[in-house]
Length: 107
Length: 119
Image (tube, rainbow over the protein chains, first blue to last red):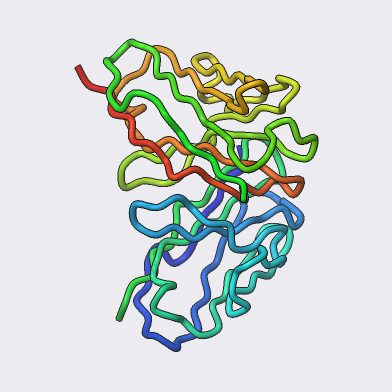
């Protein structure tokens, strides 16, 4: 299985901050990387697919980049509704695997 | 728009079989463009893919669970189902059904259903 790691595991930020979350795969996954946002008690929501493509309806302050083994999710200006846990997921090979998550909370 | 809804018992005894159904509404499960999957999340932990199915019945499973998992589809009811046998407390989790698109991302999720394994 491809192992996914994320850093940091948690971060505190203020509204308006630029936030960057990193995801690393244990082997090259090309651009087969997706990002999800999960709020407490809710299902994950797809934000970014194929490393850098914005899912329909997702605000443009979210962006993704990277290829190979290293990827980033950036929130350009953190909004109150963005406080949540973010997961990366590789879709390069079966089984698809998720990172452990990065919790973004209020500073 | 397309919606997914999980249903099934919230409590299962150890060694028994967990059975859940996902009902798809607002669209057809028989679309050639999608796979349909199950993903679970133990309390306070991360996400684990269980397996996926195509409307034709073609399946693939997480090797870590393969010996205990069966996923099936009923196109006449627009549903797909999960059976997980010989459950233990480690199988306690929120179980989600989701649609997998061509990019292999999961773009639409059910609200999730909590299943507790306890005697």
